[in-house]
Image (cartoon, rainbow, N blue to C red; front, side, top):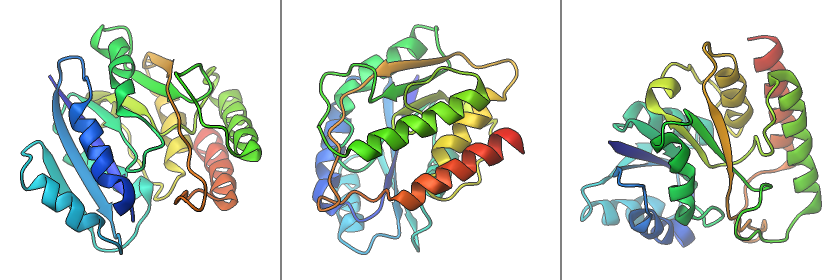
Amino acid sequence: MTLSIIIPCYNETATLAAVIARVLAADTRGLEKDIVIIDDGSTDESVATAQAIAKNEPRIRVVLHGVNRGKGAAIRTGVAEALGEIVLVQDADLEYDPQDYAKLLEPIVAGRADIVYGSRFKGGESTRVLYFWHMVGNKLLTLLSNMLTDVNLTDMETCYKVFRADILKRITLVEDRFGFEPEITAKICRLRPHPRLYEVGVTYAGRTYDEGKKVTWRDGLSALRCIVRYNLFP
């Protein structure tokens, strides 16, 4: 079996090479790696970095968006390009650690789960102490999402989401930015029969805005809109 790892990238020169090295070294429970980097209109050296690494690594493909379209649009492109039976989303920064792949994949490989979310609030190895109000916002958005989907997630907004590809490709995604997170959560919870959804705790080393963090309060409002739209007006 093959694991497709989708890496959306926008202006991540400082971390991209290190992320790719960690992805290549990660334990994937015996699954072959199919790595798809989607550069979303970067204006720094991200494209050159990705292409230089891919030139010597046949497991890596680089797909270019001519202009910045957003993380959700990059993930849609990655899903269309994915060759594996299992699909995992990996950010191009160093906030999430590919060393967690083994425990993210275990419930699916063992046949117990169809989808696994990696929770920052469920007891990973370590979590960097950062913004209080970001944590509050994430938990409030997760709570509202849970109320409408009737599931008990602890971290709906997490980057680490792993899917059986046959289930993921049944879903039509439309959100271009960070609204992908509540959109995909609402849509998988509406599938019949219900996919088996699991969570595992993951390590999280969040960034400050000076270090390149891109999510803002506007994305929180957009997430709220998406929770309402895709749960109440599917």
